Image (cartoon, one colour):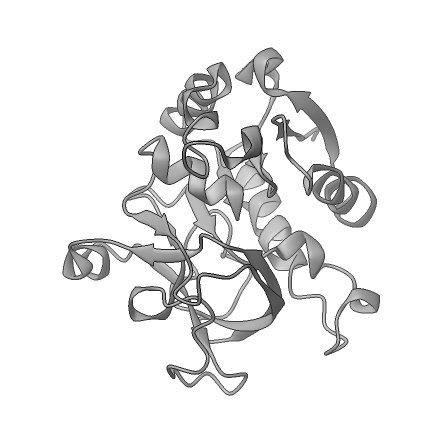
Length: 235
C-alpha cells in the first residue's frame, strides 16, 4: 500500500524540512514538500501545515496563509475524510481559515517562548492520536509568541470532545505553572468535529528522535504513526 503525504511550504515556513525528515526517514512514508501555490490534493493521502512564520506573520499570525489556494485544496481533503495536521503556525492558519474553532493570541508573557513542555492526551480517537493512550503525558517542545488558545464557548468544545491536548506537569497535573502561554484551561491542541483535522502549538517533529529530547523520549512519532494508521484504516 502506497501512502503519500504533502508538507505544505509557505513563504516563511521553517519547520517544513524537519517534518519531511521525520515522515521520510523515521516513519518511512513517501513525502513531498509542496509550495503552497502548487499544492493539488488529488495524489495525497494527508497533508501537514508546518511551523514557522508564514508570510512573516504580517497582519496576524496565519491570516495571509489562510487565504492561500492551498487551503481550498486542504478543505477538499478534509471533506473526503483525509487527515490534515497544523503544527504551531499551521495551527494558527487552521483557526484563521476556520477549519478549527477558536483563536491563537499573544502569549500572556508577551514574549516568544521556546522550551520543552508536557501535554496530556485528552482524546485518543482522532487521526493523529489513535496510537496514544488516553491520559498519557507526552514530552514536546514549544516555540511561539502567539500560542494562547482562546474560545468563547469552552463547554461546546468539551461537549464535542474537541479538546485533545492540555499542558500539564510531567505527572499529568494541570497547573498554572505548567501552562506556558496562558491558554484557556491549559489547552494545547484541538480537533474538528470529525477528528481528521488537528491543530496544536507544540512541535512533534522536533520530538521524534530520542537524541533531540532532554528526556530521551521520542513521543512526537506517535502523531505521525497515528496518521499513517488512520489512512490505512480508510484504504
